[in-house]
Image 1: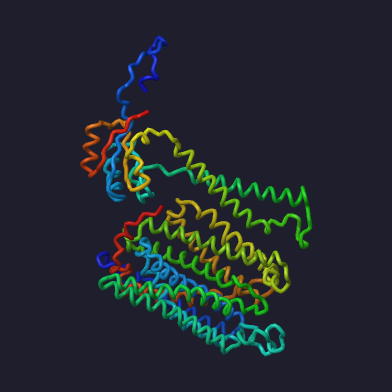
Image 2: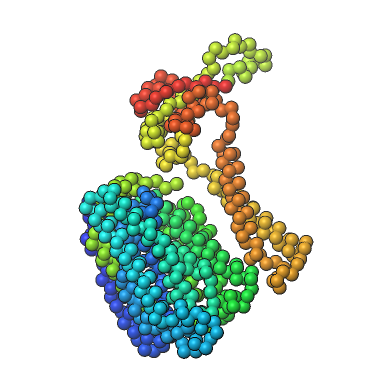
Length: 393
Length: 195
């Protein structure tokens, strides 16, 4: 990779761009074969993979808006990377199209029998294909718009930053954050929770959101590690920034666990069959083992290993645990989505892998392509120098 | 300390009371956190080791400037967390299975899930207590510290950014140390007496 330290520009994508595109195209092409062979399993795998990559894009949008709202200094050097992650949201909106065609495969409430189901009849005003499609388009449009707007203003700032740019970014972020919180919650209700339409949990959207933001931090740390291994951003993103990212990564691991336990706890305590059914379905066959893997792998292991300060400052360890947590986030999404389609236990199909590589390849390709187009730090931000010299405690 | 000493025969040495107590440290005030950080770096580089900084708020980078070792408070906090959370879990187990077993909504006697919220809260609380008590222990808290003899020193909790160089430092030399501080832009340089 050629990196120009004067202008902070990547001059190519270090030979990762093209392979990502090829893997993406191959993955999606293989997935089409899956569609022909076993539509239901394929669509559930596609939904899982799409939500996985969507979560990383949404996390990027979240951290960018949070950065502007808190006016924080340390994250200035990371801002362009999170903006670029959010910039993949329009691509993910396009990749949502297959799910629109699969409503009848995925969602029980769209079946003709739902018209005779006393509970689903009452939910029909909300859960029907037309309104579902409209809502989905609204969520994706909101996120794409916010990502585009923040990025546009930020790129204008590169040509000479003023307080006016900062004020405009805050003006977008403040309502944006509220809309983001509501839309991610409703989106998780629609796309994930309505897979089991009789069941409900009000914390579900936050649970999805925390997991997504956590996985974005994992992806961000890995991106920075990769860029630095290639010689870019030396002395711009320092150990202090990596420590701060590690702290937030750790915080969102705990927040995810907090939401997961809060949901479980109330359902466990009340012990009402209509609510406990979710956990009942996940306590059979291999789902039971996967439930335990999530408890220990998604919380206990990272909690006790990432908690210490030397661990957060250890590049190799953090790279390993970030990869592990990305895997765990995928397992968590599968645990939420899978049992509806294979209730007896988890079956790893080729489509799980092909969709992950297909969507991920496309997303990473776009991410690297847009990252290389502009300076990879916001050069016009007046706080850039203070950010480079930041110290984490 | 001169008046504590006894001669080799064990007889009390008779002292005339010292008109001025021996110096304990030199303190100096700086204009702001950046100036203090800069001064601390220079003073450490000049070879002084018995140096401390006193500011109204923590200054990022001060620990590194003075080459402070990493604080051990976090281990005490971890011990507090494990001890506090563990003992509540033990209490819950003992109460619900041995002392007073009750069937509550058909769940097993030892339904630890129900007690996670208080266990979590007590873990946090005892970690905080561990941090506080550990901090008090390691900071050697004392209310008659010699530095309090100085009137100007109290500013450290208001708007003073104060550095102190103790007389116990091998490099300490009243004139040279004062000159160094002056060259670093210090104001209100003061020799604080011990006792």
